Length: 428
Image 1 (spheres, helix red, strand yellow):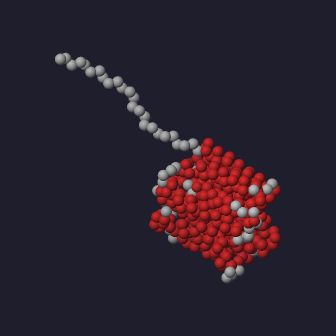
Image 2 (cartoon, helix red, strand yellow):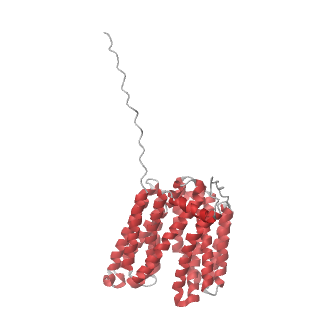
Image 3 (cartoon, rainbow, N blue to C red):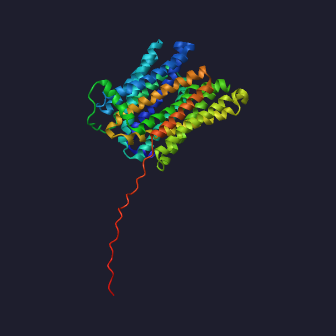
């Protein structure tokens, strides 16, 4: 997998992604502590609103930026987004009210909605060979999972030495380092796209989404993203509820459960490149979507078992860890090959618009799944929320299967039958 790092351009871009993710992880911890300082017991609602703002920015900003920035050199666009994110992080330690947090978070996530699709669209051009691109996708998935595990530990170590507001300076450093690394390489020029729409901004913003939804395989990819969101939202939103309330375990077990989810995803990211050398994307991604539905059904059984399992959760604690690892693995089986599927489905000149549309639409799936996991779990109970999200994942898996038909097997056309000429009898 690490062989792709021999490519200098990709090595710098991957390092830029890693340091930016590390900075984002520090900001996540610091933001929670800042919200508690500003709102006290209402910090949860502040963070929930900030998460909703993040999703709205992701859904709404990416297509607009793709429409406005299709003629801007990618390196300039990536550096500008990094500098904007660094500027926002620089201002966060000095905010004094909740509305300022919301405003800065919106700007920060708008910059991320600019950076991420542009970054994703560059990698297929830097690594045109499918084998190399597959390994790059796995490395990217691994970087996201590692960040989710390492950043909290790094933040905890820094908090033992400095106040939490200093963590924002680590975020600034990460984004500035990312900008420097992007500047240090020459990116491929963007191919001109004949007939690119030149009408109103709204029409141009929707062009990438129309392109994405016009291809059956990409509509199937959107359904698969919905299955991932159904499983991931249950983990992200309700892990603390399962560990603390359902199982009666200590707060220290919350990161252990989240680590099981990340560990399952990381294991798949490490193994998947060799698997994809032998099987198709479809053979991996569709069964994984059905696995999400099955794992959520099993989670409903574990949830319904109640506290009768004994102190500390009894058998339900290892069962929860196994289910979380399974959901992480299934999500990685879908997310990692997604870039390969998108690259094979659209022309190279359309990749920026297609990646922006996929970024926006996939986060729309999370915007649907988060409230289902949180509000339904709080009002109707975790069992009902788990069954609802499991049903959503099952519908998404069935829909993806119907939309993504296997490629027909090409058989050689038989030659037309021609009777042999009759041979004249030989006179003897």
